[in-house]
Length: 100
Image 1 (tube, one colour):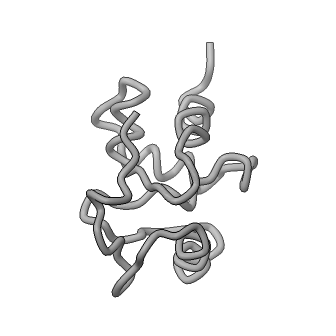
Image 2 (image 1 turned 45 degrees about the horizontal axis):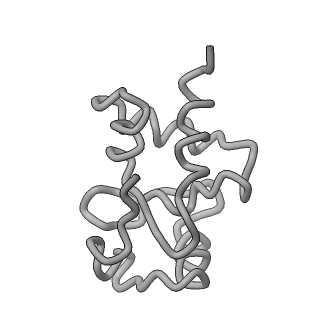
C-alpha cells in the first residue's frame, strides 16, 4: 500500500506540461478530499522533482502558492511551460486547469 505522499506524487506526476491542478483537486484524485493542506506538505517534501512536477500545483483561487525553491521560481517554471501568470496568479485558471 502506498503512503499518502506517494499517492500525492503519483497523482501530481500526471499533470501535463502547460497545465495546472489545485491542491484540492489532487486531494480529491487520491480520494482524500479534505486533505488539500496535507497535499501541499507532501509536495513540499517531493524528492522526485522535476519528474513529479509539483510546480504545476496551485491554490484553488489561482494564486501560485508556495514552492520549496520559492514562488518566483515556480512562476518562472510555469511561464516557461506556457501558463500565463499575472500578479502571482494563473491568469485563467479554467483555461489551464488539468482535469483527470
